[in-house]
View 1: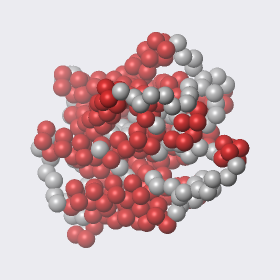
View 2: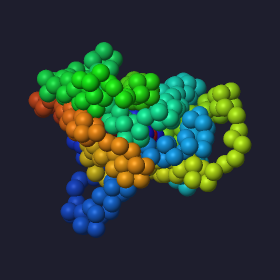
View 3: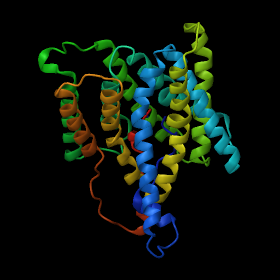
Length: 346
């Protein structure tokens, strides 16, 4: 999930660009190596899928802002340790830090808080499905914000199919009866915030020279500071701290916001961003299974059916038109596409 803490990476290279930047291909990878990335891929999907359940459990003992602050604090701790171990440097320049501050709000502080408030009144299963709409919002925004990313007919069809899926999940034909409109709107707004954040990152933080880990750690750290200011203004300390909600918040931050980013970096480096982005399509499935089996949440027929339609539409929006190959120099100068919004899982 929100998933989706999304790392503030600059535009991810296409598989072709990644291959051209790596040494020439050697012998085939051993089977054990392939199994290794698949295991980590499965772990990433499980962590992000269970994030919605952890949010729900966390809000049973803490206010939504406290849940968000806790997950950011523990996530920052994990990324800080990784920065020290790898001896990585923080980004330099006031302009970069200014853009990171905005990215921290759009990709972490705001959507994390919105999901936490949403799950006060909606099931974790619905929140997980709402999170899957991020690629749909992203493509919609690209129509007006990214002139080099115009949609094909297939991608436009995917956008329409995806939103039909959203209406199916929400039960539009029955007047949204039994649905908490406010909570659902907050979850959809959180997914929209992810999409806005990725467009912003693509336009402002590409080519900074800083590593992905450095940008991610700095962004999450800034989001932690933002919540440190906001949380005391709107909440008070809980009279007692229950163990289960506390463990949920710790796991949400250390695993879902910190360790999951490190897993994602390794998978992208090993198999490329295209394969790594496929994790998006497993998150709502896992979130739904976790909510139904562990929290006893009820599931109408329209929820899984609509979720499948949403994921199908999201998959179509990620396709790209085949481009005619020109001279190698011209192709090398083309800007690489931005990372898929699917990486914005909570």
